Image (cartoon, rainbow, N blue to C red; front, side, top):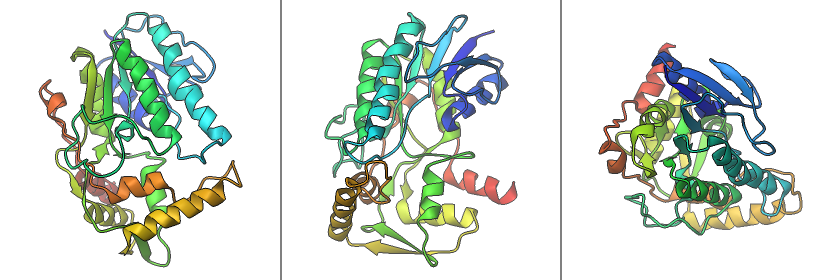
Length: 303
């Protein structure tokens, strides 16, 4: 029986990887601060310690610090401690074991020109500490010969970030989005978990992971709102106004370094520019995305 160490197994992505691995007959070590949903717990603070990976045949690294903190805030240092320094400690402990490192499409350079993003797209110019630290962490992983997966906007059951943030932005039956609708890639957590367990057999390098087809942004938002029983009209903020508002909000947020600004340059970039991931490289290794946003909405309505 294969033993898989899953870091961050108490979190959103890691818990799905762990439960899927057990369902497929693997033994799972849940490596992190808290126990995972299955398997044996191996305590690890990614910001401080080298993990004990004894007995693991494969390491799937899902542990990460996420957020869009104020530039220069203490939270930026927290992201670096986990996403960069924690990666170095993990790779030290892996000691030659195969590693699948879960990154993010946030490592790609922002702005236009992302209507078909391959793994060769530039990785620089990040708008926040999350993108910078994920890029730095994955650079360490790639140099060590790991397989790096780059999903975009992961959603699904137990999502603590994407969908809750979207729902919280509805005001008086209306949701305002920057610029007109466009095409975006999203990644169902089930598709990511499947890729994590297949990727150990892939050649080292980076692989985009996304749903079978991109979505129209506004239609996707309506699907999510409807699945959660929220009725809201979608309005559009002109893009120049959205950029100006984000800059103003971030400037004010610098006066409160522990605050979490509700509207940032990064958020505008993620919603106002088409970002479609080319997943041909992963598909060439036999991976097929089997889950869609429609499946997610149907499960919510019938669950």
